[in-house]
Amino acid sequence: MGAAILVGVILAYALFSKFLAKTPITGPIIFVLFGVLAGPEALDFITIDLTSDVIQVILEATLVIILFTDAAVIDVAAARRQLTIPSRLLTIGMIGTIAAGIALAAAMFGELGFWGAAVVAVTLTPTDAALGQAVVTNDMVPSPVRQGLSVESGLNDGIAVPFLAIAIAGASGEMTSGTGFLQLFLEEIGIAIVVGLTVGYVGGKLIALCSERGWMSREWRQTSVPIVALLCYLVATPLNGSGFIAAFVAGLAFGRLVRDPYPDICTLSESTSYLMTMLSFFLFGALILGPRITNITWEVMLYAIASLTIVRMIPVGIAMIGSRFTFRTVLFLGWFGPRGIASLVFAGTVVAEYDPVSTEITLTIVSATVALSVLLHGLSAWPLSNMYGSWAAAMDAESDRGEMREVEEIRVRNRVTSVPAGMRRTQRD
Image 1 (cartoon, rainbow, N blue to C red):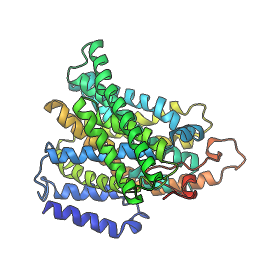
Image 2 (cartoon, helix red, strand yellow):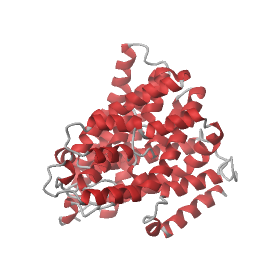
Image 3 (cartoon, rainbow, N blue to C red):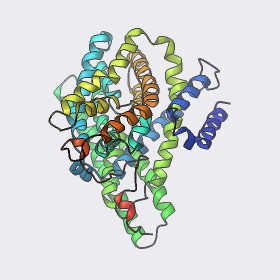
Image 4 (cartoon, rainbow, N blue to C red):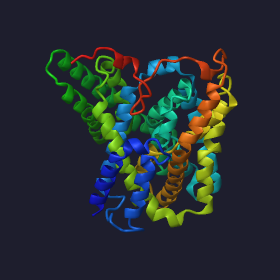
């Protein structure tokens, strides 16, 4: 019955997706709500457990495909040249958010200790633009801001993975010395980088070669993208490397080879990742949020609110010093850092690798934060983006403010606001 409900919800959402896109009711809100209703705390149609291998495979495969596709689609070099915002938010902003999250979690939940607080903070650091889709698709929002948030969201989940690996290793007692850190870096992170570069480069080269010689059809070229992504994970994991890091690094190498000659190569993986993301939000509602609603205390809610506001806003404000963006824009950037798919998949990773007591506290904090983000960012995306866009439209076009800069459109996963330059070229068959 649970599977039938899930498929029915997906179909119903698909039928009205264009209509719903014009309302504050986002896909994540719908799927989380129905997940909670179908879960064991309500109608009890979902009987599978979060620790089930099936659930772990779904969550991990979702993140692998997202990490690979984001890295393959985004032209990082062009984004770095064109956009000020991602460079600042992915360095100073991201490190500051992790540090602030650790400090607050350690102060509020002393039983977690430093490394447990680090697990919570890193899990809640990546942003998910899909939760506030209107912000990155509303043309009223200035292009540097709109694209900056999209690129940040596309890259910060991959960048956060090594930090999560270090935090979990520390919480598990594997970081008691400098030797432990070096071993982790050389094994889990180092192996992942080597595997990712190798599989991504070889996969991209083979696809480009076979396509140029007419041996590969467009359909199979698109189908090969999630296959290469999963291959990275399956090769890196048995070698004790992080499959997530491998997938992200592979996407970077893969994209450099095939992104320009074949602009539509990631079309299937984008659609696949979107569907799997909605499935993951359903499972989040049923298996993570639902069973822990009664465990959410005022301390947990306070941390969740702080995580969505000051824990991100203050580091973002510091990161944007000297950027020539207005204070209103900095507030807008600080607020629209929704927590979504990466956080809930990271939470699933915690279940597999962390001790049960700390896992329960972590899952409760993460579930409250993600649920609050799904609701608040979903409902506020349209009105705040329209309000901010109207204010930006009234600015002097000759102003030297960052909002007024003309930038080239940067392609991002599932969030193209106009036809990108690469898609205007004649595509090879």
